[in-house]
Image (cartoon, rainbow over all chains, first blue to last red; front, side, top):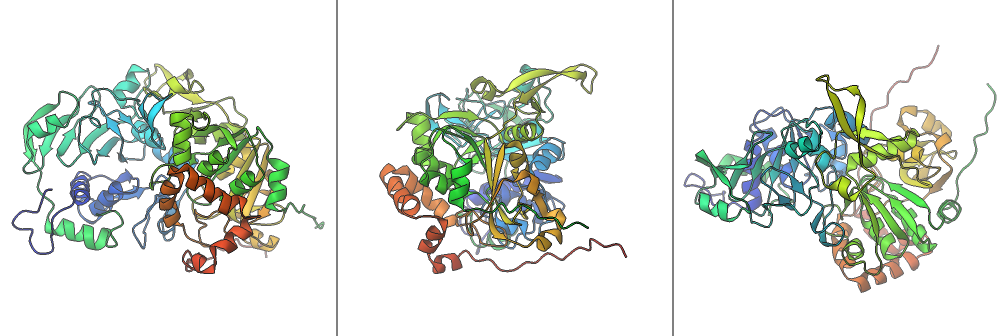
Length: 264
Length: 315
């Protein structure tokens, strides 16, 4: 889909979807200190950010690894290469109880099958929970990441009305608005960025809907509205996302994922 | 000092499962991606246990196999997927179509499961956590309850919070790198929730890559995750965590994780797989031998030794 601009010649072949999402997500991590990341695009984004906009960034893995220095790109959140040479490996009660619930995570990365305009997420079922059309893996730690991270970034590979839906089939991981309505005081802002192949949706916190704030070159606001299942608000100062640059792509391809574990 | 004679708790996997896993039991199998007690699950299948409630945070391949073998009627879990390598075919058939029979499913999140083990281990009536506010999970899992804190919140107002109940499995089975004969169990790398799961249980079986002499354990007591007093049986079962890994012993069999999506999707293939690899092997040693040395060479790991620490001794 999106290709590099005129300055991106030679080695910068056509940019893949994974590369585009990783690069854009990495830029959003500028200035962040701790990120709770799963495997796949979040790992790529966080690793690239570490080499570019957020040199001090610490990646905390759900398995209990802090300050990993892997010899190879990990294939799972519990890959042996994450443990060997890591700064710390902590038990899960410490990780979830003290690190995450204790408020030490700036940005949590989550994926989901469905997201709504308030940034509530479904990763449990498509259809009715009791008789699902498709049973999905469920929360894992997503409910806790949402409840306790200062903010949450979501990377969605599909931007269509089935995924960006007016009403979730099931709410696995609620944002702060739903928590408040249930009488629970939210600790974080919930989802603040949604990164897709079409652009970026953003919101700042309680009471705010996700709004279209940035587009990839060649994509229009109408394209994004057509891919979104609710009446999407568009920011007045809608910006155009700078395509992945040669330096970012080189780092991603040569340093972060040279064996193409996730880049495809 | 008096000479102490520690109890020798070693037994075979067949003996341990025969003694500690009964039809209808609540069985916890823990190990978060690392040190998954697969060999124990296979022996439960071989012995034909029925009506089990399985408690496991990440219900993955071994749970799918136990479901397919007809061992499990209830599942308590916070993640029902084949890692990031696809679906669990049997679990999806059971949940989506009650095929061949329904599966009762108690859905939690990871920290909800951890809190259940902590409450279970500490014999508490419940455990609070800052999860679930506004989630649909309490609507399908009435064990998640919202209570009012007896203390004022940071703003002086009353505060509501969700709680989860304890879990006290009849037996917890975990895999570890090494133990002594009395059950002092040492784990390194990811330690997950194994200690809490063991203390929550009425009986505990520890499966290890190797038995070591008491002096080895006592040379590094901080590495003991589970003390002998919490352990009822010690089973030596090298490579018993395959297809997961044992840090410093063998690597994860990522190819098998990827293959499982295809195997489990087709009920006939899955049945044939169980017939060949579980029912068709007498024990895990046969399963290991059947895979062959060349296969295991592919999962071999190199050395990365920790530096010893000085515990000191009185002069």
